Amino acid sequence: MATLQSGGVEFFAAAVEQDLEGIIGKRSDSVYSEGVRGRNWVKVKNHKSQEVVIGGYTAPRNSRKHFGALLLGVYKKGELEYVGHTGTGSDDRTLGKLMAMMRPLVRRSSPFNSTVDANQAPVWVEPKLVCNVKFSEWTRDGYMRHPVYLGLRPDKVATAVAKEPTVFKRSSKAAVPVSKEPMPSKKKSEAFIARKPKSSVQVKAEAPEPEMPNERSVKLGRNVVHLTNLQKVFWPDEGYTKGDVLTYYERMHKVLLPHLKDRPQSLYRTPNGINSPGFFQKDAGGAAPPWVPSIHVPSDSRGGGTIQYILCNSLGTLLYLVNLGCIELNPWTSREQHLLKPDHIVMDLDPSDRNTFDDVVEAAMAVKVVLDRIKVKGLCKTSGSSGLHIFIPVGGRYTFDQLGPFCKDIMLVVQGMLPKTTTLVRSLAKRDGGKIYLDHLQNRKGQTLASVYSVRPRPGATVSTPLDWKEVRFGLDRTAFTMETVPARVEKHGDLFQEVLTTKGFDLKKASAAIKTLLE
Image (cartoon, rainbow, N blue to C red):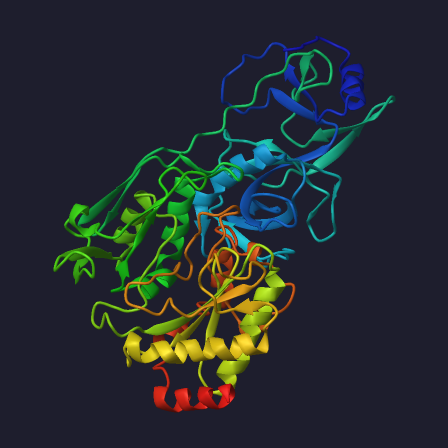
């Protein structure tokens, strides 16, 4: 710690020259009391700085990772008042650490007492994290101009953070900004540099950031789910952990579970993250806790045996599956009440490596044209990978065998509309490598696709996300729908796939006749 007994103005000038935050002075005859804030200290600032509470963040843009900007506030009369946002001052490593601390604090509503004018859809967090920023000035509207993130203040209590008004004490040599905190008496003071200088002067180290726990237990009614290895990194490039996946599904369970209820789950487990091989597990019910529901389904290949599939009907079961390493969720299209009659059929648009996503969008728009012509409802979602899925509600009225020819006919019409970019050839060896496979064969007993709102074990932690048909246009960015951005999107737009659950379907005889006319 660098100290001196006099020459405060000169010392401050040195801090200004090195572009440091400022200096701190203490009464030389006072006693140092750790953790006690009293009248024996004074801050002399070079930059305007302010302790602020993090109340939310926005999604990242372009190549930026983790988040775009922090939404900041200070407390005034017991309420959190928005004072601006900052997206500067942090490298990728710092962004990742901050993101890891904010995710468990995500909440549905804004903690601020007024509307926040964010340039992206905000994700709100509990106002518990305090950070320090520097800025150029306060605007007339009470916002910080050009705030820059300087670091977390884990030693600060969020509710004690208030706006720090600044006055200017002028000397004959320089205008010295001084924090309006209790001032010491006119005795000699010792001063030291408050931030790391560019010279060899030693400074006080920042307090370490608190680590996330590696295990936790969630009590749900009479049942307890023990969650383990929360710090295990599942996405090495992005820094997302197993705990992040669990947090996402905890937040999304109310909108997700209706789409999983009573549907056998084919588990796809990736317990070592996205860069390690995963594996499928269907017969998983016998090893699950007794409170996890399951169903015995006759096997088509075990000579009269059965497969015990798990049914994901509750948050507890959902967390249990994710804790097994199920980043992705793969339900059947039919339910235990009618396993041979799906609730919806699926048109899977599966591109080759040589297709652009605009090619996939064009194919989806062609499917929409066909469905409109035969007056059948369809809803579109991203696959969470490189394709698009179109779900057609049928309400459990018909069997897979009855629906199979109808599904194929839809794709035959689409292939006729787009012969240069689509194909119905399933075999990879025989398929033209530059075309989209129009897959209608997902509509069979036991076939699965990634569920709506399912995270995919892919770079970027992308999510299979419902789309409004107005969004299915050229230029659609499939990578924008991620574990970070989708919760805020759902909070704003609701469940765009709700009609898959509520639509009773269509008259298959009439629709089949209509599609035949398009094939003639």
